[in-house]
Image (cartoon, rainbow, N blue to C red):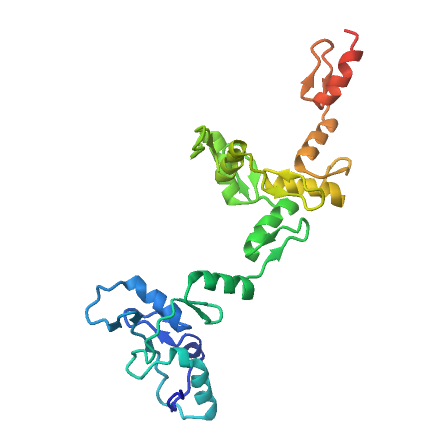
Length: 291
């Protein structure tokens, strides 16, 4: 169906957002976005032009006073596709209602699942961390994650001065001071400071180990445990000791190692008062202790 010839130029804004809500000033890039928006107004407005199974729509009119040319007509014809063509009085020429429209490209789907599948395949891009290869759907989340590797910790606890790379991590940490544990296991009623700890705990009841190594098939209850384990196969050791530059596969191994450089180790021999950086070192000392 051919669109009636227009006698005015279209502004770039009107080309980008041609569909206008008749209940408020908002404009939209495609029919389905407008339909979804109009549902937020409900059906309580007097005089709203609405059909069964569809919503009355209006097309933003072009500005007056500009001369016609072939390009403006071409733009208008591209703008209004046969599937969503609107007549001059703002009512839809086609009475078919397509339930879900892609905001990125305007493709329409009868089911929400179809839209989600399409978006994941056509538009959803992931952003990978160059250090650990963890992927994120949004670049801002990748930027936040990269602070783990760079050491940039902008959020400081006002109780103990411990620093965090993310505000959400600081908020969870503060619960260690307040004693707040808002998440409860529905099996044993043990409480946790965050949902990830609760979900990990639940696996002790279910026996679930959902994270499997694709090299040796060993399974883990936690995704980060799998990531650390995989470094055994790759040889990757991303965490370095600031004193001796020795490298480790995990922050836990690095923390244990740092005690070697601590003159006052946390483990003390009651017989001779000698101190050790680890329990393993202390266990080796015990048979040799002469006191």
